[in-house]
Amino acid sequence: MNLPESSLNIHYTAGLARLQLLPEEEAVYASQLERILNYIGQLNEIDTTGIEPGTHDAEAFDFTRADESRSPQPMESALLNAPRRSGDQFMVPKVVE
Image (tube, rainbow, N blue to C red):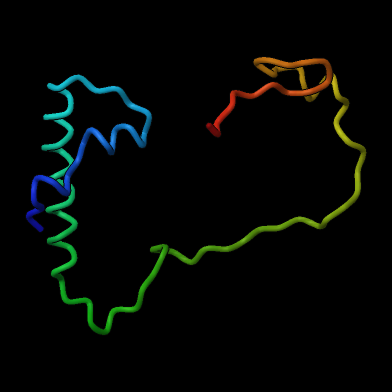
């Protein structure tokens, strides 16, 4: 899965992850990402005809509990470990620009 240099844009990819990389770091990460993508290309070449898709090597179970009504947690208790708060509300950083 040899990718053309233009399709492996580390600067753009780092920007998506909100990373600011030095040129030396970009070179290191570009090399690592290229090796990962080449390995994935090798995996894509394996003949998996007749093999059923799976998600777990062991059977998975969903454990659920009965949906029972109960008293809400007191406001002060809920906000006790909040890093920032305004009155009785959590304050969170803006994530949409």
